[in-house]
Length: 215
Ligand code: AP5
Image (cartoon, rainbow, N blue to C red; front, side):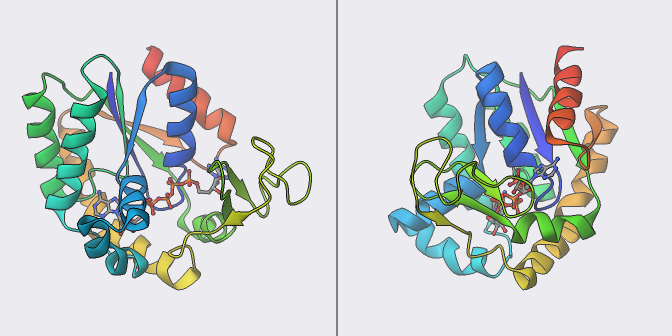
């Protein structure tokens, strides 16, 4: 099964993708994570992408589509793919069709996380991760059980994304409205879109997604 998780920054795409990886053995293909890894490693792609990401704008279609194709080849044909943060433009949606069909795959669902944009700024500006294992936390919604200690690995260092400040979040939202939301009708016309209330509790969102995948 191949699915897209679609929604604005902070909608919960990464959160829900991680659950699907754990519970269903699917593979998460997050272009944001791939780009951040490239920035960290100082690769040519990372060097190109850093300033664009820090400004909250979109990296070039060609770069991200190449990353997705490479990752699909690497994961092999047997596992289902969860596209998280990709496609984000009409050109990327078109590339994804070509990338999938070249590998004998097709899309099963486009799951739109329907959220209230005002709540997203709080979600994004409050989130942080363990610097050692990457476990996600939030100032309001999910603090580590023991203060300053990661529940998963015991790490004591935490980090925040450079693009998670209020000003950049506004640019990311504007990019979503201008370039990503317009791709929904493409998938609606193909009967692929399923809407889920992304403002519900995380477990309830997961249950709604599970119901779609199991239907
Ligand atoms: P990317 O990493 O994809 O960021 P994003 O789309 O802005 O999404 P986020 O990771 O911020 O949010 P999310 O929806 O995954 O939410 P999360 O689960 O973390 O992209 C970053 C940048 O890379 C882009 O700006 C761009 O420059 C570049 N880029 C990436 N892909 C690209 C592409 N295809 N083309 C061009 N450029 C690209 O949740 C957020 C917080 O809310 C967490 O703290 C979580 O715990 C909490 N939360 C989640 N669900 C709930 C809930 N139901 N209730 C309460 N809290 C919740």
